[in-house]
Image 1 (cartoon, rainbow, N blue to C red):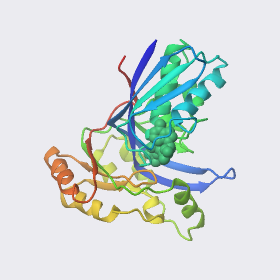
Image 2: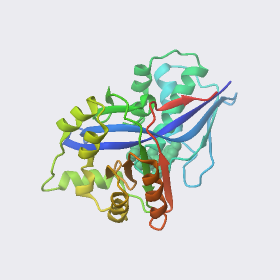
Image 3: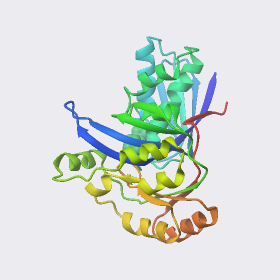
Image 4: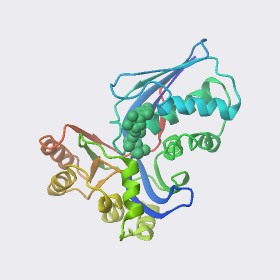
Length: 290
Ligand code: ATP
């Protein structure tokens, strides 16, 4: 049996760090949004008892370091099922190490596919409990849409779907270390926290303009991300309702209520960065395609 899912990228419409927890993790307030940029993940049964991974993009590990591998391993350990052998193929479109949860999306797809193949009939909640063992963004990738994510990112509250709009993603080539970004929070003398209450109210009302007025990422105060300032200035010049970094970067997105403005911004950005995508909000993290 072979099962294939499209697994969506995410952006953070808001990301604030509320505190460092005793276990070293951080308590977060994140407004998460799936976008229609997908990796395609196929999982097929084999009979060799192994987890094998292929991926069409160089630089993504195809061994047990791959989040998809860890997700499969976590599925078998949590369910107690014996792995008879599976082959995972990842067609990557979500840039990796970009702040768009590409690896977590692949992991989510593998967990959902194994639930289908092994007919375990686990609920989304149960799948999320397996997912969080692999990574804090995996539960959101299993559900997707528009959600408030709290604690380390695994406490999810669904919110009304974002009004249709155009979201331009621009990913600079040079990456950012997520660990360095959190270290910068831990050692920062002063952090200006964000309007989380106002954002939650706007999001609960499905108010795109209210959301965009409050869109912010605390990491922008803490880390230097190459090309962030010029990208944001192009987005703003072309009439973005909001321009902000996603996750710990380096991807910067702009939200537009007019397709022609989004296209013009994307065209202009081509002289600044190579990786540009024009996306729309997606209402779920995973879509089964066969
Ligand atoms: P997040 O927004 O959750 O911080 P990200 O977009 O910054 O995620 P990923 O694309 O998930 O980062 O990848 C981070 C690192 O994990 C990469 O540098 C890569 O080496 C490794 N990795 C492991 N598995 C995968 C995968 N399936 N896809 C992409 N990267 C993976």
